[in-house]
Amino acid sequence: MSNARNVLVLGTDQATRSLFVEWLDGEGWQVVDAASPESAAPLSLVVLEVAFLRGGGLQPLAEAKLRYPGVPIVVVSPTVFSSVGCCGPCAAALGVAGVLPKPIARATLMEAVHRLARSSS
Image (cartoon, rainbow, N blue to C red; front, side, top):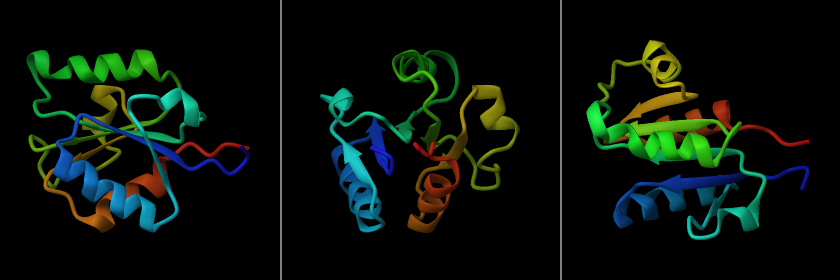
């Protein structure tokens, strides 16, 4: 699969997931079913919603890092201010490719996906 454009969306509610699927699908990305992500490997990117970036709220991020080593992760969170840069110090502190605020605009998500997704060759 030299042109794989597979994105795994984790931790979102059904409405947010549906919206992300619509946006990603509309730009040629394949949203992988979280129940069987291995079937669509290789993954280009993981989009992970994390409600709280402090304390126990980071457990889903730790699990994603272990389960998908080497795959860039973009964290979407309502606890991130819109002024925080996607790939700035906050992302570095979390050890992820990017962080995005929620609510999120389509253009913001798509820019991050295009910029940060791992290309497979």
